[in-house]
Every structure is written in structure tokens, then in C-alpha cells.
Image (cartoon, rainbow, N blue to C red; front, side, top):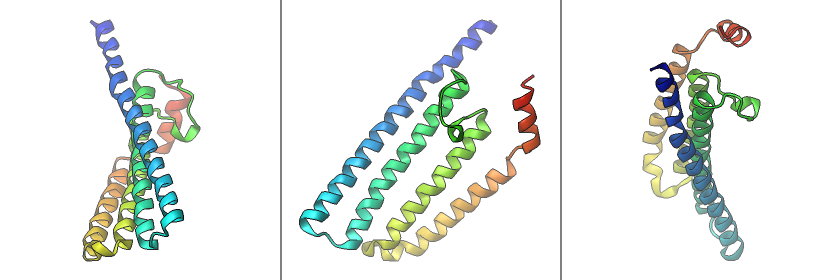
Length: 163
């Protein structure tokens, strides 16, 4: 029975792979949109505010792709292969590591979306609502991260002595 239960961890492979593929797709689409915007500005001289909104939209897609990439790598590393070769900042040792990395990327996405609304003259009336909502969400994430954080000395002790 233990062997069967231990094998079920490999079921995470499908969502991890799907997250990584989705990340690559979003990053590709965001990059293509960025190049299109650059070409459009070079050929047609698009107005600055419209260019800013288009670039921020492309960056938003790329950042969302980054979230999916972190999720995919994190799930794979947590459940399947903890020796996955990733940069130190992307290593995930437990769900708290994955949570903190995701919170950081989500805050970056919220910031990009808010700046996009801020510079979009067609949505000027939405700036206060988006600002308050963004601030509340970031504050909530910060409180959540603070309330659920682990003691750094316990984490260091677990890494040294994993028993």
C-alpha cells in the first residue's frame, strides 16, 4: 500500500508539464506582442501612452508565464525530482518556498496591471478603484506571507539535518 501511495506523487508530472508548456506559450506570445509593438511604433509612430499600454500588456503576459514556470518547476521539484538543476533563487524545498516565490511574482503582475490602468487615458476613472484593490491585495498577501512564514533557524536546521 505504501508503494502505491508513494507512486501517486508522479501524478503531479502532468500539471507540472502543463504549467511549463503554458508558461512557454505565454512568454512566446508576450514576446511576439512586444516585437509587434516595436515594429508598429517604428513604422507608424504610435502615441506614447498607447505604446506604454501595449508594452505593459506584453510584459503582463510574460510575467504570468513566469508564474506558471515557477509553479511547474516547483511542483516537479517538490514531488518528482528534488535535484532538478535550477538557479538557487528558483529552488523549492517545500510548499512555503513555492508560496513565497509565487507571492513575489503575483505582486509584480499586480504592479504591472496597475501601471497599465494608470497610463491608459480611456480608463482614468478606474485608477482609484484599481489602486485601492491592488493595495488591498498586496497588503493581504504581505500579511499572509508574514503570518505563515517559517522560523529561519528551523528551516536551516531542516536543510542541515533532514531527519
